[in-house]
Image (cartoon, rainbow, N blue to C red; front, side):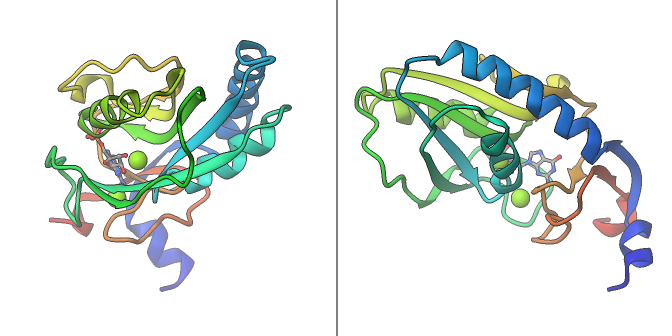
Length: 183
Ligand code: 5GP
Ligand code: MG
Ligand code: MG
């Protein structure tokens, strides 16, 4: 597919690469201050969070081991099923760790509420959430997210790690997917 054809699949750029970079620098400074002297572990939720993890971790001026967990809650659809499947578990023992979950987006909140409960049962010392994007009007459960990048409208977005049927993850910006692509 050529670049122009990919552009035709997007109806609007919602957050640019530059805006994301600035926001992650800001969040990284806050996290570094909040976790000074603590044993911080970053946990990325695959696949969507691989890009935000790469950029956020490099913006963070402190030691922070990185682990990933792969869960799936959507399949190839654009609606949350609420059914969470572990595809890859953590390699790290969470006992005594200060865990910061790094997420691409909070939509219904169902995936994260499941993950938070799961991590609590593994004995983490503390658990907080960083999400690049959040759709406040789509929330089905309340998630206490300490570090939020951008609140966005309830639309299906792609890019910067976020996919539709495994496409568009490699776009640099976050964009609204044009309805003609999935309808
Ligand atoms: P939630 O459980 O909060 O509804 O969302 C779970 C996962 O669904 C997110 O981590 C993300 O992978 C995916 N998701 C939610 N909203 C969107 C969206 O607008 N675009 C894309 N590409 N994925 C989304
Ligand atoms: Mg995600
Ligand atoms: Mg997806």
